[in-house]
Length: 101
Image 1 (cartoon, one colour):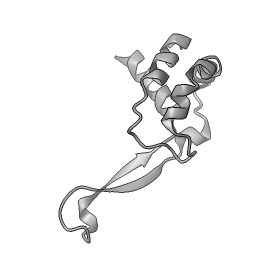
Image 2: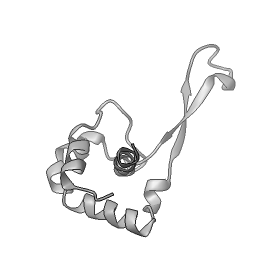
Image 3: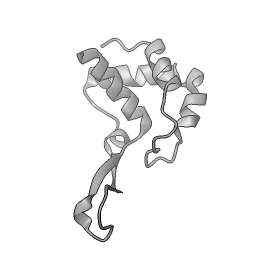
């Protein structure tokens, strides 16, 4: 897809502040508040990544965290894994998914 600044800006401005940050430690609020600065470099990075078919290594890394569902907390079977990835990578995923739909 052609990745537009407006699309990236919209996604950054609508980040859910209640979700976890990735292993880089950058909170979503920081990205949201810096959206006007990030709308220049991020679309270029996303576009180059799309054209080269290479995703930055950090965006592919994830921390698997066990999330308690319900039941006996001592039982490891009742936890489900959630992968925490970096927010810029998640934004790129949303752009690609929106192009596929």
